[in-house]
Image (cartoon, rainbow, N blue to C red; front, side, top):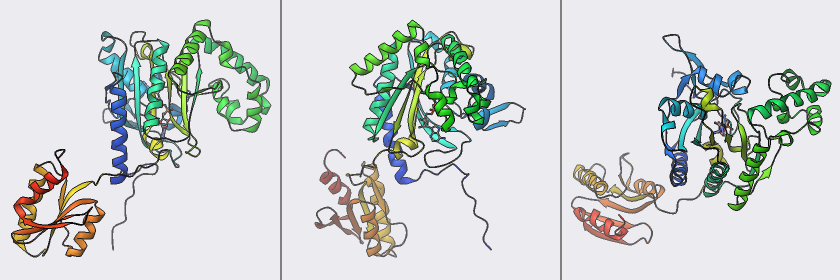
Length: 421
Ligand code: HAM
């Protein structure tokens, strides 16, 4: 009787070869774009004190209320697998005294995050985000630059049907005044709302804008809009962000109903969606969080950033065919029982790699025909078939063959592939 198979937990996935290649090219692209704008890579721990997210992300959010993987460790501390990256980056900023560095301090990350969400296509319980955070400046040019960098990343990755929505939430004070206004509107039409929204009037009235419930949507059509209740300073800030985005040629729609699922935002908020995705259309989003560092015990420090889902970027972009052969040289063995030929193949594959070629040899006892088929599948540019002292080298693109001494194979392939190798 065979043992029962163990599967990966629901909502998680393994990253296998072909996907890994696309993920690696996304990482390279993100690194180039962000580092050319002065962002430095940061990695924070996979788990943090639960308090960091309770305080940073906000007690009334779905993330804190029902999506955190929280555990108690051996010494009774409450720890949480990070559901997002902004609070940890701000924690690190405070912990390492980064406010002493010249502002803005620009940090980027590519890490995995954990949320106990309903798993479906594009929504996982462990997922990866690339993110960028800039701390220490409230200049609207930073908002526009940050948004433009994500627009560039999505464009270079070939994400299709991208739409950008932006809005401003103003300062906390303006939002608090507006909250009361909105609560008044919701209370006056309580009976038309969904149970869920009615239950959240006191805690999180803004989420009503997110509802799919028909009655709620009707009520929200005539609800007061935060954008009409911002302070003068916030309005000027938002106008400047928009005019800089216009200058940079980044297209956007202003959406006064844009709600983000995290509590730390102030002023600018934005979200990129792709129609190529189904229900989970959010590819990336972010905004300003001018109160978060102080909330976490640091000096008053404005901040601005975003995060984008790696899996969603890849789902929404075309897989580009590799046009370069991935393998320079495959070394086949004419007779796999011939120990001398196998020894030569081994020495040659090792020498080929030392010479900077990508090379593989036969390791599964296939027939010669099987080996050639396998080499083809690997996209080998050259195949060398080893026999005692000499070998046949085949150019897989032209089909041309030559017989040469086995010790000359590596130099011959290197020369043929040019000085680049
Ligand atoms: P967020 O909107 O919660 O923001 O997540 C950002 C992106 O992560 C989403 O647009 C989506 O692409 C991806 N994502 C979120 N949840 C999942 C999931 N369960 N499965 C797959 N992908 C997912 C934040 O996390 C903020 N920290 C962004 C930010 C940075 N704001 C300021 N700085």
